[in-house]
Image 1 (spheres, one colour):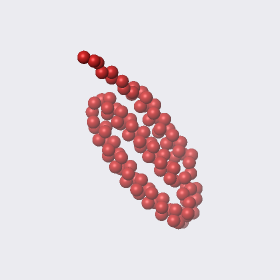
Image 2 (cartoon, rainbow, N blue to C red):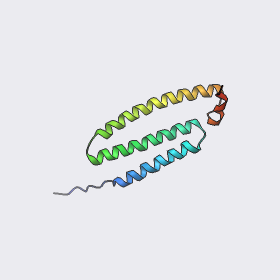
Image 3 (cartoon, rainbow, N blue to C red):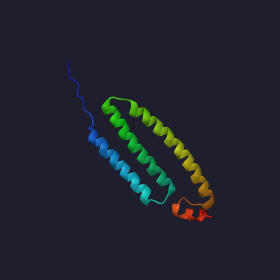
Image 4 (cartoon, helix red, strand yellow):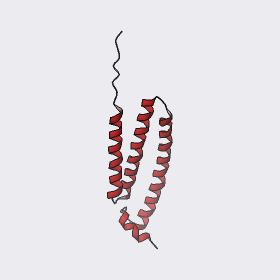
Length: 107
């Protein structure tokens, strides 16, 4: 009988990739001024957390993390819908997606 090789990615690589993605998201939120890019960076941070949850779930053999990822993705989709609606409304008033221009909306 031929043995099947069990090649898998070590868990440390998932941790490093997720940490890198989360740091890129943090840097994008802190240093970018375009609201659309900031929303994309927030989604990148959520996806890095989802990657960790799925990796830990796969290594532990428990599917609870994968179910939790499903609920996070549903909430993230609702967040994007509300965020884009707000962004379209702001763009109609100010004609820009730059967050520095939003000072014009103050009373």
